[in-house]
Amino acid sequence: MTLESIVNPFSAVDRPLHMFFAGVIYASLAVFLSIWIFRDSASLIMVFLTVFASISLMYSTMKMEEDVSVRLKDEISILKRHAVVIRYLMFLFMGFVVAYTLWFLVLPDQMVALLFEAQMETIAAINANVVGLFNSSGGAFFQIFLNNFKVLLFCLFFSFFYGAGAIFILTWNASVIAAALGAFINSAVSSGMHITGAIPFSILRYALHGIPEIIAYIAAGLAGGIISVAMMNRDLETNKFRKIVLDVIDLSLIAILILIIAAMLEVYVTPLFFS
Image 1: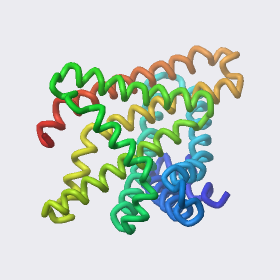
Image 2: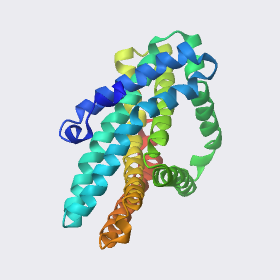
Image 3: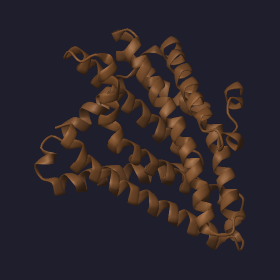
Image 4: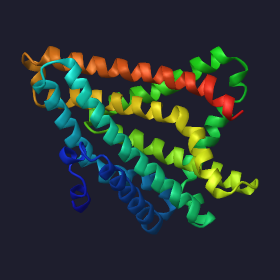
């Protein structure tokens, strides 16, 4: 496939910016194909086409990291390597968000309504569920962490059962975040704020707690992908079993810790700036 040749995961580890541009290309192409060919179901087809473009890259990444888990001697070195890979997957995710947000802002309202119909419904449902939630900060923290933890489990299980399946969860979240960013920017501009101020303001609004959340989801997806590839390679039937399982547990625990921090930021820090 032509899109697969845009980025090589082995070289992208050292040049993560390539992943950002790959994400922009994958998402932009998906936007145009979905609105052109699958107009009535564009909001979901857009996500699926982006996933299809990325899945080979994700699977190669999972295989690469499973090999790292087996080959490197100590867990600290393995986790450092995983951190580099999580960074370049984060750049891919940011490419998706930037592309989706850009098209949300520049396309005609009718096209935007078709492209982001499911995403806007999801945002409305989330907003409805959190009404009154912040009356109790303890309850808000627990509920937000629980909701995010469910997404983290989806990332882990999707990667475990489908190899690179976490990319679907990440792409869907990228499209939802982009819709929220686009709507927030449009609302700020309508209120009189210049777009050059509205864009960084909106990014700060969602990035403060959103970036740690996505890092946690990527780490969980990586953990599920590693154990999935290890099972296919039958590495779990060898003396490598303990090393692989330890690596997966460490990644999962780190993901949960980051998710706790993200929930604390969303409940206790973000409201200070965006009440």
